[in-house]
Image 1 (cartoon, one colour):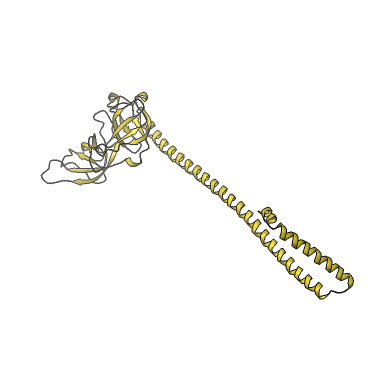
Image 2: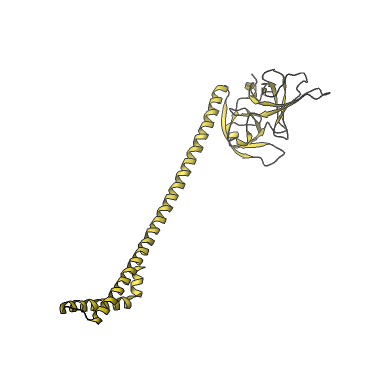
Length: 278
């Protein structure tokens, strides 16, 4: 940019330079003579004004030029800092995700060790879009010894059972699905019923006698009958009790212990049904 300015104004700069040199020469001659003539003073004043103008213009141009260079450097530095900040945020987020996953897997491992059953850990890789069936898809299948009817649980409680399996994946029918049923007992009173899924996303404890002792907050667990779920797995807590007049059974709703919307890893109990039923 500076080079272009110099080339563009080459003639003017040459003329001004010659003029200043001539005036300086006249000034030196006048000093030798001892005094300045009126013409000399006029020319020197004009030269002084011209020189100040040139100096001022040059300084202004230099300030603009170096200011421009500085801004370019600052802009590049800001871009690099933004890129570095973005990369650091990405790394922090990755580490946070890894930490949370490790904690979930540790919880599952702890549950696995205390359960006394053979299990395999699986990741949730899909959710059924159909409203008529509440299912999830996991990344374990027949080659991992995962087959139809096996129980699926987590350290929080009962999830469901394997509905179908392919070589590498399996579909799990959740306990909240209307087609799901699990033999269950109220942990406190030991009154029993059948936990069935419903349309609301909750679970109903059906066939519970009207005289059975059930109150809001009671924990409901699996009874162990049926050979799918071991005895004592948490299903959820009673959220509503309604003893309607004239009915043989009371209406009981259960809030599932598992938050199905946040499922990421599960355990599949791979022991045989006969072993589970012992």
